[in-house]
Image (tube, rainbow over all chains, first blue to last red; front, side, top):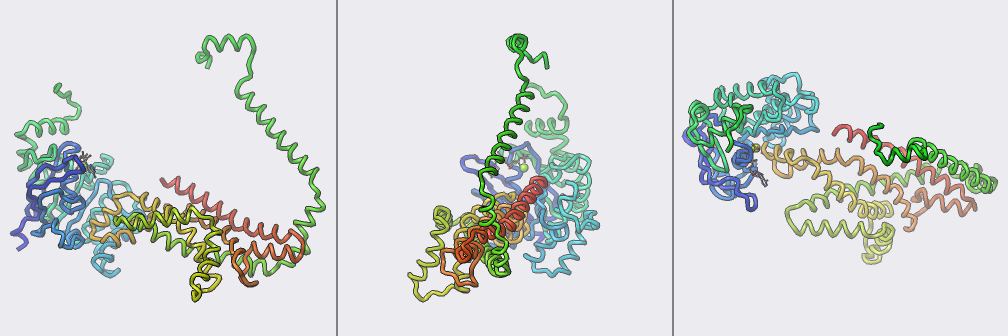
Length: 255
Length: 280
Ligand SMILES: Nc1ncnc2c1ncn2[C@@H]1O[C@H](COP(=O)(O)OP(=O)(O)OP(=O)(O)O)[C@@H](O)[C@H]1O
Ligand SMILES: [Mg+2]
């Protein structure tokens, strides 16, 4: 049954902050089990789009349905919906006053009502999955950025989400730590997790994504299989963006 | 160095050698020390040491203060301070949350509270709680009577200051913390309670400790409520004994008791602030 409905379905999505229209009509679906990478220049509205999916930002107009449930319907239990949507932030946003294990158990216990034993067991499973089984007593400040981001992923997974949103999960990391985080995400994708990933990691998009969406100026400019969008982009704006990202040192022709 | 000297400067240095800034600073420092020493000597020579010792450090009088000085006066000061602080903290948290509420009337009410109680002398609040309230509501009994009144008066005053401190602390917690908590499915209330407020309190431990120092001193305003012998705190105790012994020593000793508590607390605040600055 769940396989019939789209994991995410966005229709006619507009979002304005005051007078600034950041999203100008987005239509977009993500199928269950699909990995979609969203790429595009800074300020194009990628984060805003992602944050509209779990309603961290309220759409100005349009609908966002997740697993067949209209997120913009004021009568739905938003907190219950968000439990099923994991989110990973660029800045990790771990809880600095809690150790790693408590970071992973606090929502399980307060929100899902799991007991200490069960929450701890699930937390440890997920820590092992991201390769940090030995760090459960550490505090976030004692971990490297890459480790913090993997803890953040494990924290989201501990809620048993059916869908994961990633907002530039490796952009705040030192280059040598990026690989560990991408590796964890790759494993997740291989296990069949539905994922929507905003990223500048074109290698990851090429290898892991089922589909790549290029956004610019609050619109989806181009989308398709990564080998098409990334290797043979049709739209000039996609071409210009990819040229900048893939060859940052190349001299740009004068506009 | 020399290359920095302009032509005009060089002329001056050559013609009339001016004092170097370092030399000038040394002389200035010497003058300041000299003034200090002279002041100490003059005060020392003018003071009537005999009289001072009799009035402030009469050991036989000081001996008579014990043990009540500690078992009654200091203990009561501490009890008044802690209960006042407790009431102030709870009330302050409520006012701070109202101040941050999305419901406008709550914000107005919180602002009015803060402006009102910050704008009045604490003494006036004491008189109001101690005299005004019992007159206005003849049947009213504060829990713990005087203790309840003092906790209430100190709490009302300190809540206004603490509310602003707590609000600033809550706002200092990065927005991403609340968002991460909400993303995990926590309600706003749960996210505030288990994620935001605990972090806010870490940030505001130093200013709250400062507030406790202020309360510790403000508890002396109990003087203006009618208190029994067993309810006296340091200031009232010192004053009463000063008049029965016709000697200032009890006041001096009571003052020392305040410093015994406030100086270490102040030191603690500086330590906490330094540690906090380091952790940033
Ligand atoms: N809360 C907000 N209030 C006002 N303007 C906002 C807000 N959030 C985002 N914007 C604006 O919306 C535009 C799109 O922002 P968004 O963060 O979605 O872009 P992005 O594609 O994620 O960019 P980046 O790659 O830099 O993260 C930007 O111009 C930004 O200034
Ligand atoms: Mg962004």
